[in-house]
Amino acid sequence: MKEFKIRTKLICVKRLQKTRSEVRIEGTLSSVFENKTGLKQGDPLSPILFNLALQKVIQSIKMVPGSVKIGKEQLNILAYVDDITLIGKNKIEVRKLFVEMENIARMFGLRINQEKTKCVIVERKNNLKKNKIGHLKIKN
Image 1 (tube, rainbow, N blue to C red):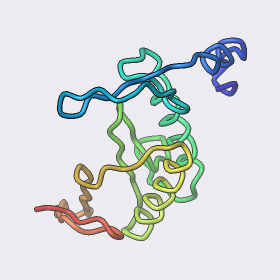
Image 2: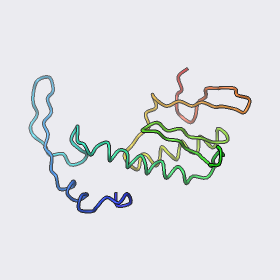
Image 3: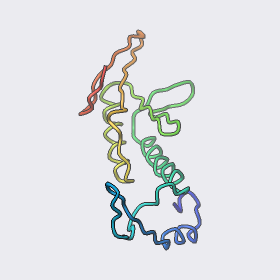
Image 4: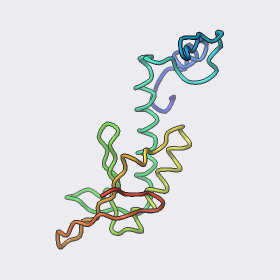
């Protein structure tokens, strides 16, 4: 978080907060327990931390060799909110980017939802093909 110029004092204050929870299962309330990791549900800091983690993933992917020239830019990733598009010259490049992104995301506690993941291959002839990358099962 220091990399994003978030003051150390703010980071420490958030770490010092102790939260306690109870869980209701079929109408029965559990005993109180202390949360050791994570944030309380609805914590306003949650989307900010998610965006910071995702930004680190995106920055790391930009450093992976291989990209496509679009206009004046060399790109291998496009991102908007939590939608990410990996761009490569061929299936091997995209597979490499995907594996790298999956590994980096895991380091930040993020995981890719395979149910929402799609792969589309577009060739210069404007042929559109759906395909499978790695272990992902792509639905038609």
